[in-house]
Amino acid sequence: MGSELHVIGYPYGQIGGPFPIWSKGFIASEPDVDIAGLPIFLIDCKSRAGQSGSPVWARFRKGDIVTHKGQDYQAKETMNYFLGVYSGRLRGDSDLGLVWKRSCIEELVNHAIAHGTQHQMEQRRHRFSASFSGEFSLDRFISDEFEEVE
Image (cartoon, rainbow, N blue to C red):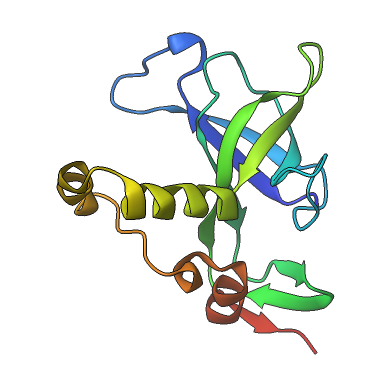
């Protein structure tokens, strides 16, 4: 918890030329624990209307320590990691927002690929290649991009 993140989108329908607006925030709840039985977690971020559906990225700098499943790991290099999709604020007067977890997005994409119109999926496959669940695994990301701290 407390890791820096960014919600990247177009608040109020704002178009900043070819580039979206980056809203900075922090993870506010334990990402490995579902909220209200749903695959979501909370963030603390000054987001705005129009950012729903935006990707949420964590930023790890070289040397950052991350705890995953009770073990500490250290980032090998500076990197960004896709956390999920921003859904909106918990309440209008709060900076707490909801993020659908990466695993949920993976399931949705894999379902669309498996059950969508074959022609539509073939046209889109070259833009986004969702593969087996191991591709999106936080365990795999941690083991590939972080070193265990002793």
